[in-house]
Image 1: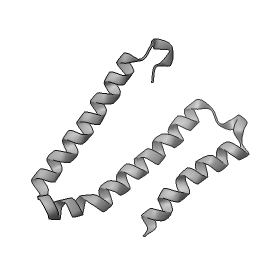
Image 2: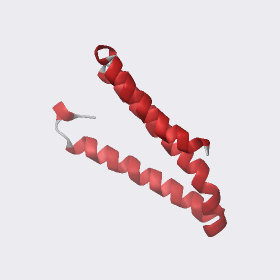
Image 3: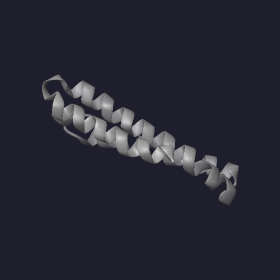
Length: 90
């Protein structure tokens, strides 16, 4: 049950820092904090859901699905960056 607390706590920590210290929150720090929140969410999702998927579809199918899902998301971010104007680049 600790993962539920983590999902709630990390975004609240980010909001409180932005509210209490707005001048010290540069875009680089904000990107790092949001990236760490995304990493925690991705890790906890895999940690909680992957064993269940192994039970239902088997290990080989689950690993293929995770690999193709991550490859698809990486490709979509790559093509999004290519399609954005240079002043809006990621």
